[in-house]
Image (cartoon, rainbow, N blue to C red; front, top):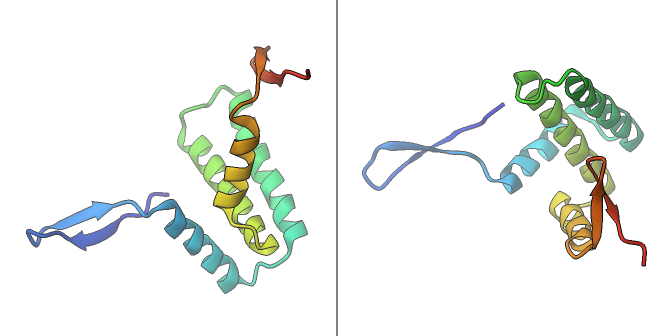
Length: 118
C-alpha cells in the first residue's frame, strides 16, 4: 500500500511525497497501540506467517507481483510491531545488523553468503 501526503508547494500547486521511513514506523506503532496489539509472542507468530507467504511466492517464482509486495509489506509491519513491543527502534536494529556485516569477508555459495571463519 502506498501512502501519499499532499502538500502545497511554493507555487500553490499540490505536490505528493511518500512518507519517510520514520513516519511509516510511527504510523505502524500508532496503529498497533490503537488496536491493542501488545503481545510480542503473537507478533513473532504473525511475522513468521507473513514471511511464509513471501516464501510461498518465491517458491512459485512470483517475484514481482502484488502478492509478493503485500507479503513483504506485511512482514515488515509485523517486524516493526515486534520492535515496538520490545522497545527497539527498527533503524537501530538495522544499523546494528548492517555494522556487523558491512566488512565481512566470505564468498557466495549456492546463492547464499558464507562468512569467512578465520
